Length: 46
Image (cartoon, rainbow, N blue to C red; front, side):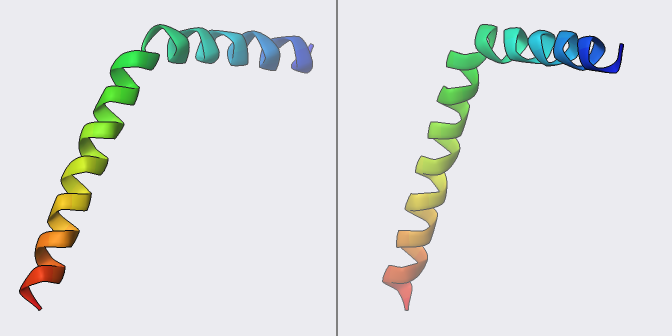
């Protein structure tokens, strides 16, 4: 019982990740870009 419940939950989570995958990836890429530019800016100051 526990295994089927867990796998059903995992499938639901995976399906949600896949459906939101592109948006999430774009958000991460944007956040990484901001972090990189912030870090390089701070490094240039020192």
